[in-house]
Length: 25
Image (spheres, rainbow, N blue to C red):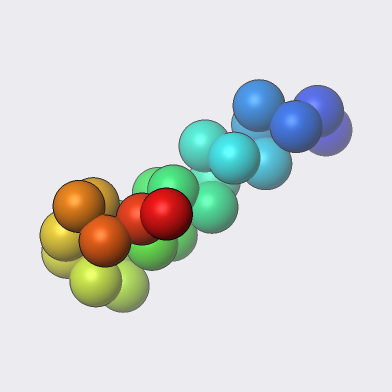
């Protein structure tokens, strides 16, 4: 797994949890 895949999964998880991708740092 590379950094890009990790980032995409992290972002997807955040969007699922928050339902709002504007809060991602």
